[in-house]
Amino acid sequence: MYKASLTKQLIITTILSIIATLLFFYLLDIRLVNAMIAAHVVLSSLAFIVGAISVCAKKGSKIHKSTGMLFFLLMTLSAVYTLIVATMPHHFSTSMLQISVMTLYFLVGGIRSLSYKQNSHSYVIDRIFALTTLLVSIFILFYAKHLYGAYQPLQTVFGFVAIGFCLVDLWLFSNLKLARKRWLVFHLSKMLAGYATAVTGFFVAQKILGGYFDWFTPTVLCLSYIFYWFIKLKVFTFERFSNTKTPVNN
Image (cartoon, rainbow, N blue to C red; front, side):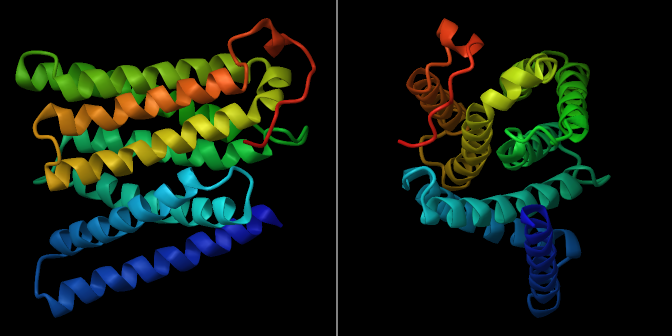
């Protein structure tokens, strides 16, 4: 029932975003790629606002769940638009390709982790996403060096962040008992990382701090907040090997 409802909402949101893109294309008399960029900006801006509400709301509350789901829908489509534009011949961008793949990996993993606690959950898709993101991150890391003659700060930092997440995921997926127990850790870390990409986009577009500070500050803050939750959920204690139930409330 949950997955069917999510699929329905995603289809509706996709149709609305396509309609918005076509309206931008015809009413503003701009190229289709520019209309897609405009739709991406609208989607990511809305995701930035809605995501902030979800992050601040009490975990597990109705408002947290509803705004979190809306954030997932908006940010997922925003990342898809970025992925399409970033792979176009005259708009190819290694950094945008990397960020869009990372964002989809975080968001899909964050939503799917809600069902990790169920013994019937299949981890095939989760492993595929982790392996794909791992390979893309490694490829872009070295491809950027090939293009520019040196390792690039954006691709290197974001690459190692993505690689780190993927390796931890693949390790945990080999221990399904631990993965089921730590479903909340998966959910919080992935959704927060996904929201960090929305904040990064806002910082870069508005030039809040300037330069690389706009790119890296949201990542540092996000990783710090994730670390806080790791401590709160006692992830770093030997307790993680026991069968105690993971707390789910603030």
